[in-house]
Length: 617
Image 1 (cartoon, helix red, strand yellow):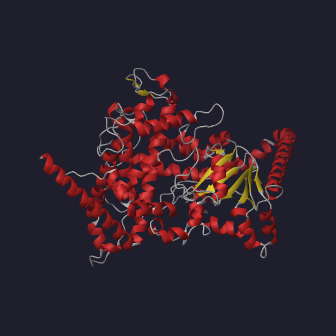
Image 2 (cartoon, helix red, strand yellow; image 1 turned 90 degrees about the vertical axis):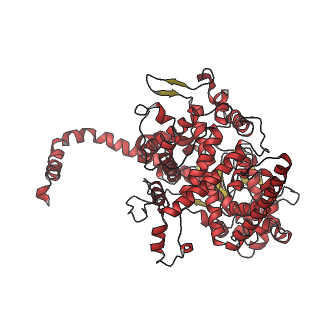
């Protein structure tokens, strides 16, 4: 109804008046506008020429790889909660089901992770490699074969492939610069020492009472308690959905939010030695600024937990969206100045910063975070008397940026990756009940032996204790459980790919085996495989761990969940191509299996994850 929209009528009337009022001004600036159009055309032509040159450099000459041109998927992205997130909200609100809520925001399009191997097979490059011109002149080489993968991970560095992570992780050990003048080596050395040696007390890693063992067992108990409470609270609804036939097994329960709470509880207590229960609050506590928070609120991680977990999910999606949007082609200052995604990042990071700040403030003496606070690599020059300064007047914590970046990095890495791996493992076990039963039998058998052994020891010492922890010695005997986790991480690695920048030209020998198979079918591909391949310096190598773990040239039944492949000698023989890096002289076992990556920038906490995942499972 036009008559009911005065603002709209005014807009239309102004539309006809303004051109007559400003025609003289337009005539005056018309030459300048023409100059801008001409300049933009020249810049565009220059960029297109650069793109063409990059394409020719990759698709011919010494490189000579199948090359495709990348294009951005969208301009902007708004995070839309999935059903999992709705279930998460329901879990936070005492089991109220929110899965029927309508989602009006744009969803992130599905990725091409599962299509990587078919694309490599179709393009048929040497070792399955192909190249992409990313943007105007960025060269990206995609690979999922062990020979080029090993060569790349040994002679490369991360930057600038992870520049879009800097808004979240800053200059933590995950994104720190490793080149000349970089801080990565010093930070990695400090973090490794903190994680491995910075335990409180005199107990070692192998001790039954070490902090790692205690907190992993505690997280497992929390998972069982929270899972049972959630099932009990949803029992009536589950009965209705099952048509009152008591067939509860056919109903699904989203365990991801429960696992997220258990793993964040584990890593928080392990890093801080702060003895606190991180159970979900009865209602969400909205984040407020530091000036609005009381000192007690800033020290209570439970009040910040829900907002932190939701912020982590949002940031993960925003980082992925940024890498696939047009903003990735533009300078960072343009992205920060004009992109709505950046404004969403800034808003979301307030939740993450608040939780990391809380962890630093609560770090106890002897904890890994307390150890890092006093290291030069993490800005200890701003800390006096081994304490983070607190100003009662302005209610602000003077925490060095290096320390904040590291706390955010370690909290995210310890929580998100653990929850994802355990989620996939439980999913696979639910699809294969016979494998689940075999694993349970092994666990019960070893646990029973431990109970008998401890009972005998208590009789000798005239003592009693009902608390039996799962220890490193016990999980060392659980070979089938170990095989289940390995197979789960093979099929669903936490990072489906990693990106590295080549610091020198990389020459690869001809792919003779593939040449024999393709010579009669595709002469062009056969010609590529006759000659060696040289990947130019400063190219970005995208190492597809997902593709490497499912490469049919390396694995027997690559898409099947077969824990026996890690135990049965006959199945190991069928996977013999995965036991080497493509070199007949190589003797490094399992090198095609790299769930934590490899090389100098591999996962820094994989030894902790090895113990934590097995104890919780």
